[in-house]
Length: 283
Image 1 (cartoon, helix red, strand yellow):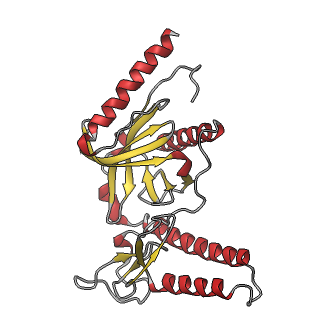
Image 2: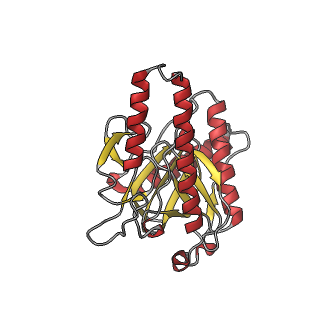
């Protein structure tokens, strides 16, 4: 009993310390039954380059933010419910090692750990916490529709739709539907992507816009084409899956390029700290 009371006090103090580290802009992390499982620095693939981020794993959410002052101050707090997360192990590139993909309905991104052991520890801890959360019955299984991961800016010097070169005046943009790099002319359309934002219209490329319009027309025609609505949903889902796979293949290949070499620094020397907890304590 004393051991549990001590752990509860220490856990509460750790969570409060994480809250304070995000300053006034951070959201409250204190919640009944919430446990801080561990924390550590990971490299997160950004739009322009990989960036170090501080990650905090709780038994019900994954929190991360940008590092202002190591072990002291962070910003841009992001909170992801574990039931909305899907992990996918990725093979090492020539430069970017120990990486895996974190999928969520609103955003999907690659992260890289300092070592293979830490990578496996992160994946296993996240999966264990998610499994315990869902088995507990307090949460429902999350969305089965996930956002695509964006192609990094440096992955292409041409629009992936019209193949015109990017320049100071012909800027890069990202289609929120397929994640491809496209120019402004090829991404003038906007569409609601419900799993990212339920009402806001987001930038989509010309191809995704055309497919969306064709899908709407097919639904209006009903069964006149001989397809049921479920058939159409399966076709659309298959098309989305193909786009996602194509985009991830491009990112995976790009992770092998030499531009990441100077970004990795000495991350292999950084560690992840996992907080101990009593064996009798239930998640």
